[in-house]
Amino acid sequence: MMRNLKSIMRRHISLLGFLGVLSVWQVAGFLQLLPKFILPTPLEILQSFVRDREFLWYHSWATLRVALLGLVLGVLIACIMAVLMDSLSWLNDLIYPMMVVVQTIPTIAIAPILVLWLGYGILPKIVLIILTTTFPIIVSILDGFRHCDKDMLTLFSLMRANPWQILWHFKIPVSLPYFYAGLRVSVSYAFITTVVSEWLGGFEGLGVYMIQSKKLFQYDTMFAIIILVSLISLLGMKLVDVSEKYVIKWKRT
Image (cartoon, rainbow, N blue to C red; front, side):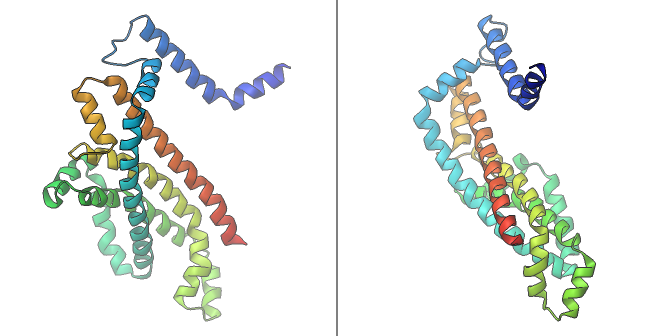
């Protein structure tokens, strides 16, 4: 009996810890140990989800559209660039250092420059998402290519396989786990970057709604938006995991 109880607690320890934190948080708010303008209680945040559900849905969909468009373009560009950089060493030597430099610049610092150059439309948001999502995928794919078995590459060459046949039948299947590792990071980057870009202006999106809530001192709504962005990112990463299991199994059959 005790062994079963320990096994159950071990499997659900993260859930129990999360519920414990929520309980302490709610009690602290109920006893007014934390001012509401600093940290609303979980129940107040839940009430804001119910109260503002229409606005949250509308702005979530606006953010999701931009994030998915930027992510799809970023993945396509990253895959093409990784293949080209693997094939052309001079291109890798030229582009890789610039990519590293761009990644050291905070997103919040790049966003105003893009708005200044490209205006307040959707274009600067898409460009910013592409800049933040391509790097993890390119690095991951190149890492996968470098881990290809050299003996297998030699065997393909002896069989007179052309570079595209080697890429499709050997390099891509080997690099798929590496690609998905980078994609998980890029998915979370895409949604977070979209919200950050919306802080600078616009008419719709969770970032815009967050700024509006801040000006109206609706801190419960602000926390609801933060939680919603986290949930969307987690859902995106979960979908990547499901896709990885399906695609890699298909590639290996």
